[in-house]
Amino acid sequence: MIAVDAPFGRVTADALLRLAAVAEEAGAPDIRLSPSRGVVLAVDPLRAAGALARLAADFITAPDDPRRAVAACPGAPACASGSTPTHADAARLAEAFRPFAARGLTAHVSGCAKGCAEPRRRDLTLVGSGGRYGVVPNGAPGDAPAEWLTIEAALDRVRGAQTANLEDLFRTKP
Image (tube, rainbow, N blue to C red; front, side, top):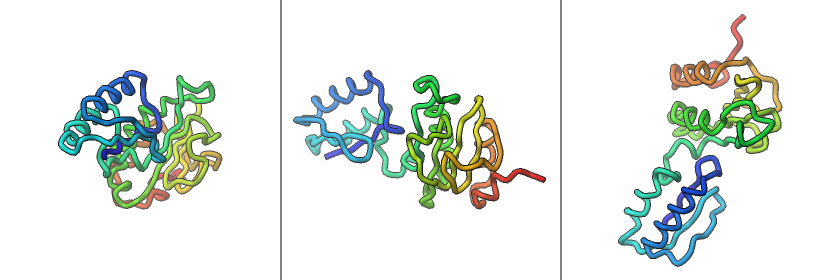
């Protein structure tokens, strides 16, 4: 058995076609959906490592992949309410957030304040508006942001203070 997850719960049609081809080549009789935004394949154990390697470009295959700690809505251009490319920005945030994810912290990148992908509080929530992000440490998308930043500025803060309290990272300076 192998299990893979779709990054941020979405995959392209081409990725699904590759998944079907890998499943067939690895001897999986069917493709089953998992509760973790992915699929489970009952593959021949001798072909499992090769199947995982082939799926790594499109799916989350490693248990410590930091994208598992980050939720993201479809964002722009997939959603009319989104003003930021949430999936691309969430992938970049996940890599910068890796040390925090390893400690069990979570993040959310939302294209707007509705919070469709994750309405609950996260350790760090970025809420898109007008091409920038409202930063909400330990909060939900509808909460008031501590400050507004570009994705680059938010990533710089996360990368620059890997051991800091996230609430201290994002505070409007007096």
